[in-house]
Image (cartoon, rainbow, N blue to C red):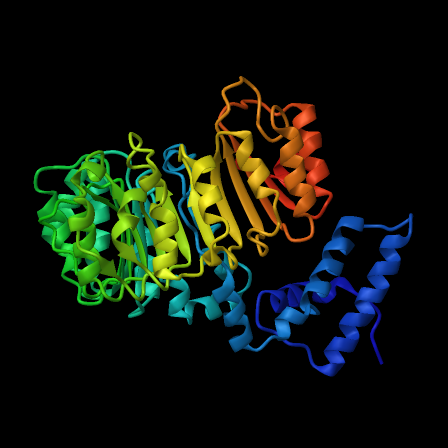
Length: 492
């Protein structure tokens, strides 16, 4: 028979909460009886010791929570799905990070603070401790946490991110020491650091298991080649991303192993051709043209290249004249030859699509001054039947008229538009081109699921703009305007 509620065993009950205690049938019945009694007590207006009894009720409800009876394997699976702490994707946001006493409120540290059982479970799972983020603002005060994380990850492969916005000898020493310990196990590395620190790292570390590299260096020293070569020695490296780093030709990229190569500047088609010929397994390439790109091309004499595996390409418009990419499904084109708008140049993209016979799912023509002339030539291509996302720069009302024809791109699900109109606090979406823009929305209402709108002129959100966006969203289309979603435009 259940005993009446008494607070004599509160210390024991609280100890149960902090452990992996699972009540027996008899204990479960007593706890349920206590919950029933305390609930009725708290509903009474004459309840004495309300705060104390509310705490007792909360503890018992926690003990009864289903999550306490999950098998360890399921609990660890849930833990693995929780995202680790990550740096801001925007570097300016990183530099504005506030001070903090510790990162122990982030994953995975927070898991070990819930209960003794969760603490033991998290420590017994080394893969939870394999994502390490070191920021210069916090490195000095978090040395112990960095070392503890390295120890708890045991022999597991590591994912490291190091961001430094200043040249601080003490901070640099901490970073180099930590990375030296982690380097043999490091499989993914993001470095956003000053050039002197990069050079110091190259002298003290080796990365035999490195698979993914993302590198940002503000200043390019004369010996950048030597500094970067240390990362290229890994025989497992297959993804390289250079953030605003102009890579000298002397750097020996492991092209035969690469699957992803991002943000590499090329001065000529010949450099692009070398990458495509040697990197047979490449599936994604960002090869940005420099100012001399177009003038370096040699017309019909240039070597024709066919690459059977490349699926994503970001490059200059002129490069397509010599390429055939049958597996391509994501294409981003940058303006590289603004002085030439001849009929022959306009035909480069249509000819490429016909030659490649690829089936595009995404096309980006951003910061491109000839969209109105290019679109009529390509929208009827079989390559666009499968297109689900289009990102374009709109500089004339004619573009809107083309996009309203649902016979073209019948599977389009997401449309991203950046307008180039010059009226202050004006947009082409809800201003000078409002009628043709809304005609697009009306025509594609049944297919369109997402709409991203960016205006170079609008500096403030007016009530009229907000109302226009709300009307579109009410049609079931997810709208993002100038980088903000509807929940940010209409905060709860």
